[in-house]
Length: 108
Length: 108
DNA sequence: ACCGCTATACGGTATCACTGAGTAGTGGGA
DNA sequence: TCCCACTACTCAGTGATACCGTATAGCGGT
Image 1 (cartoon, chains in turn cyan, red, blue, green):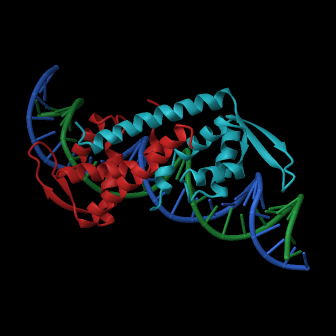
Image 2 (cartoon, rainbow over the protein chains, first blue to last red; image 1 turned 90 degrees about the vertical axis):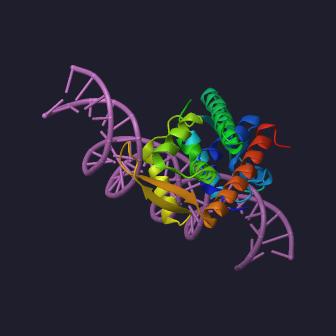
């Protein structure tokens, strides 16, 4: 697949929110999850910048726990603001994709 | 609707390509068309920057014609490279939206 | 001792949509 | 007549985001 970078702007963060919303998890695992979901080229560094942004914007709760098989992990869960942001993301995605699909079908 | 700016990255240019592909047209009319398609907040300046980029990247043919009711218009049509780029855009959109929808449905 | 896998952080880059200001042609109302 | 609205395009600058490269570090196997 061609480069999706530009198209992912705004949506990748939503995907990360959705993954965190479905279960408490951490950066490295989120990256692997995105990869197996078909976001094949998304790399750790990208996910970590998103996670730090989410934390800075107060959308997640963070707990650090030892791993046993490597360095400690930072586990993320959504707080109320995060859940609200996630709902907004899906509303925006729904809105956008419906317009795009309409355009594709000839736009009447 | 909330701000779609970030989500439009990469897709708005594709929308403009699609509109040009369906009929020869010009910037101001493209903006109006996008607005009536539901891209309500897209403004002239944004469309003109996209059009100049398309021209610079050699994806369109441009003809200037007098208008009669205002300044002359620059009419755009897709060339072969433009049609190829448009096909790529739809392939990428298809790819992305299918992954996002899968994620939304629980991502199995 | 080295390598690979796991795990995170961070400065710098490119791209894109957007903003704001400027230029310009036409026609209508005060 | 003069101003305003609508039409129509250009361009320099801004902000947000994904991405890249590099660095640090724990753990297990050879």
